[in-house]
Length: 88
Image (tube, rainbow, N blue to C red; front, side, top):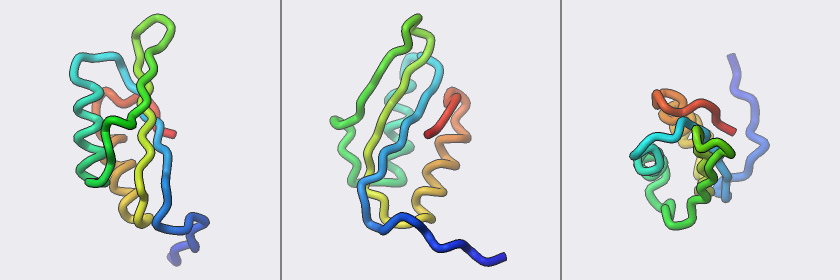
């Protein structure tokens, strides 16, 4: 199986939206995962939104993506977190 060429030119700023259940510590846990895969991410730039009824949080992190491998690993780590409901 051959790998398709990337449509993304690296390095680049890449937004990731993480949606999950509103839970104490959720934001910090997600930021720890993001910083593991993108150590230069400035966690003061994260955009946090709470759902209308307060049951869910949405975090938007803009990282400096350096490779497809980095993005794949980050998305997999976020997907594996038990409180994450959706990734965009």
